[in-house]
Length: 252
Image 1: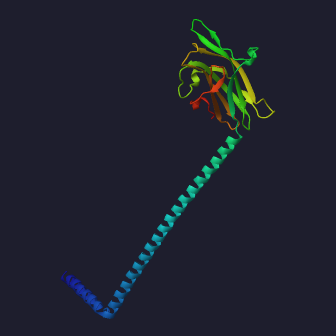
Image 2: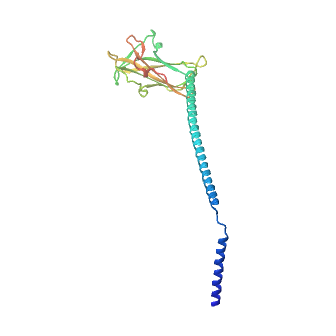
Image 3: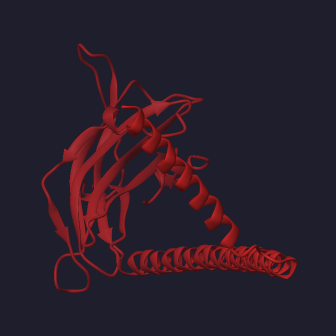
């Protein structure tokens, strides 16, 4: 047992001696080698710094390039939007030139009387006094393309004043059936509708007898249009367009 212990101690001593000898045989680095290593390390660090600076410069150039691309994109978008607006405006102008324009007028129905004059008729009943005449609504197409007439309404009143805008819901329906209005000689471009225009009450000083209405129609472009008309009947039985009531004589 003691012999085994001595053998182990002897082996450890030999191993320690071998390690010490190996360490002594390793060549130690000289000062020149240390300086060379430091210079190599510094060069590598400087190279890395130069690369970082180059990367930053490239990123800045890319950022500027991207910014100007965005600016150019906005300019192109603005030019495109302006071009679309101009084209749309030109299309609208062309449509307004080529579309149908339906005009509406009122006159008395001269065929009812041999003297061809306006006759104001008065009546009385359970609903009160009335005043009226036989009227003719004339619709004619003054545009460059056909139109389809729709709803036609009118109302006769004896009033001291009128609201700024006419209310179609308060007007009486004259005709609702679709009627084509052409241009030239291809299709009749004028329609004449005879109807009784009756107002409640009697004519009196300080009030005016008026007749107004609306004509709805459709043009070839699918646009829903309308024309309003408004007249007052003078003491000598003439039809005069309503003054100071622009909404009563308007085309859309």
